[in-house]
Image (cartoon, rainbow, N blue to C red; front, side):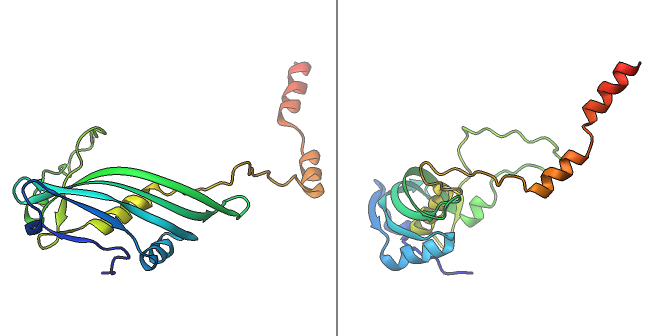
Length: 185
């Protein structure tokens, strides 16, 4: 198992009944490691606030807001492109023995109905602890633009070469052949 690039461990026992708030900012080392993990040039900032509160007596709810600034290469020009990310998410956690026993879809059901507005299933807690940093890193990965493009950059496919043009001119147009058949009948 790999070691998380950005880790902020919170134990169930450390969260009071009213909840707690955690302000975080990833340091340079964590940002560099995350950029490497995601194959991007640089993460210049990753910071936010996490509100952690009890959930179903044995679990935790994480409500989080984070912002990130990152630099990627444009998919057209390879020039650096800056992206600002501003995200909020909620994640619930339960002990492994409870989260693992949540209802699942029977294997013999061929049709699955998905309610996009339904609450996500709780994630399993690891030994009564959650890693807020790793959860933020996962949400960051989902928010990164997979095809960053510099403003105004456009991809113009290369024009066909002379040889390719000659090849298309030597083949008869199938519609022209059909037109000739239609006129002859």
